[in-house]
Image (cartoon, rainbow, N blue to C red; front, top):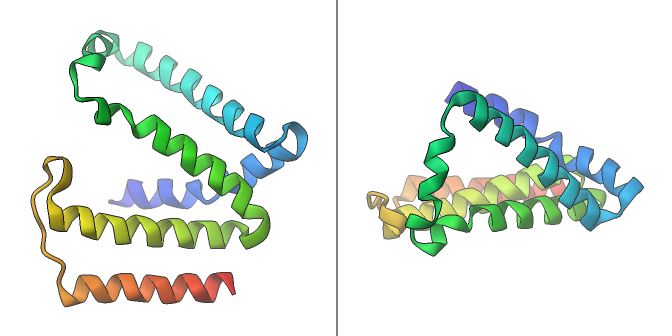
Length: 139
């Protein structure tokens, strides 16, 4: 959990970094460059880890398990554009709120094989509080 929180904190830098790159290259090219750099780094990490053989099973999964890259590209592109108008805090707040709201529904429905977790009053209150916090950060 601590490592996830640390990465989440560092992730707050992603939108302003990509926006800076976007000022030099344009917004869509900046998103592309961001993914190319990330892809190259991951290729090195996979090669060094010795897990290259696992790539052979890539297309043995249902198509929607390959959608993660599309979702990541959508996030990076939208965040790169939105950071200029709502700032890094606004992007982070809106992202976290959207993620939590969707995750609560995903858990409730047990989507993609997850164990079903009911929406409780406490979980709903958490989403409402994040919505309120996002409003306060962006306004």
